[in-house]
Length: 223
Image 1 (cartoon, helix red, strand yellow):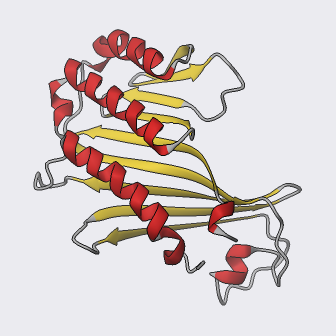
Image 2 (image 1 turned 180 degrees about the horizontal axis):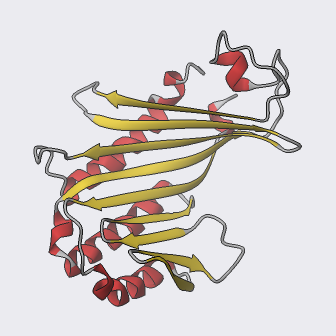
């Protein structure tokens, strides 16, 4: 695999409150109108659960879009036009949320996730699997492998930075092969010391881009 062959399918931003907003449904009108304006997407509103609302595009050709809103958080995912374009939209939505909910000005968690496709070319090897042949050792399973998922959660505490990273690698080995990755970089303010405000959120976004471009590939030992 080569770095230039990787393709980012979507970006996802998550912003979580310190305390639940039990009056969150009263804010849906202003927030959803603004989301539609920023993303230029016409969507339908689904009350999925008593405390969860989803926005789904009416255009079925829009594959990578979701907006989740509940008493704890907003989750916004969109297609990967480019990182700066997504960051601008996500921050605009966050700032508007803060205008109608003051408790969102200091967050418990903020992060950005990249959904990346590594390859759709079936590999050759002992197990016909990139994950088995390169990362997983001493597991002897019978039968034909159908799916492998590897999740690694680690702290990034290098170069004066302190982040929480979740890395998920998923390999599907059916009729259609694919190896995809989810790279989730976030900060969690568990004790109030990190003070995740707007400046810190932008730092998290910028760090995630820097890490992806400069260190991620070597951390997977794929140089």
